[in-house]
Each structure stands twice: as structure tokens, then as C-alpha cells.
Length: 144
Image (cartoon, rainbow, N blue to C red; front, side, top):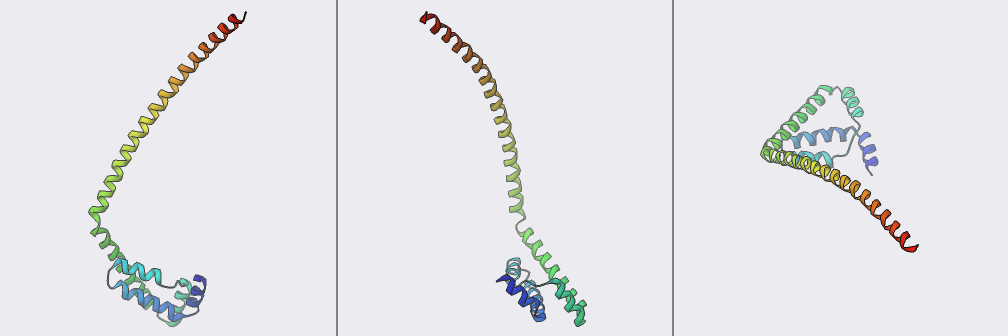
């Protein structure tokens, strides 16, 4: 279905112009959620076809200016969104750093524990082999 929408938009210069107009109108509200929703709902179009249309119609400067305004408004909306959530973002970054520190500590403890288990295993395996050998000798002596 997306391919059909793309072909439909590629074949209609008005749809590309309408998309720019819709984004520009939406971007004038400076609401990042509305802007993102408008972009998601808009049919995709071929950027090369849009550029060729703008050049052929003599509206390259107008189209570039409109795209520049949209980009500027998107940047402002994104900046406002980040600024509004700055303390929350910093809190999350601090929490992640704290968790990373705890993870490093846990990893270090696990490594030490693994080394201890290897040492104990090495020690007990040798003792077990000695004990098994002696039990076998005793069994052999009892059979005689």
C-alpha cells in the first residue's frame, strides 16, 4: 500500500506541494507531537521529483524557503521539548550512571566469586581423586 501512495505522490506535483503546506502549517504551532504525527501521516514523496518540480516551476527559492522554515520550526519544537524535559532527562542520565556503577561492582564481585569457585574446585578435585584412589586401594585389599 505504501508503494501505491508513493507512486500516487510521485505522479502528482500538487501532493508534494500540499505536503509542504501541511507541514508548514503544522510546524507553525511549534508542537512536536503534532508535527511528528503530520509527518507520519503524510504520504511519502520523491525528494528528487520535488526538487525538479520546484526548478521547473521557477519556485525553487520559495520551496527552499518553505523547507527552511519547516526545519527551523522543527528545531525550535525539538529544543522546546528537550528543554521542557531537561530535568527528567538529567535524572534518567544520573540513574543510568548509577546503575552502570553498580553493574561494574557486581561484575567485579562475580569475577572474584568465579575465581574463588575455580580455586575451590581445583583444590577439591585433587583431594577427591586422592580419596577415590585410596578407597579403591582399600577395596582391592579387602578382596584379597
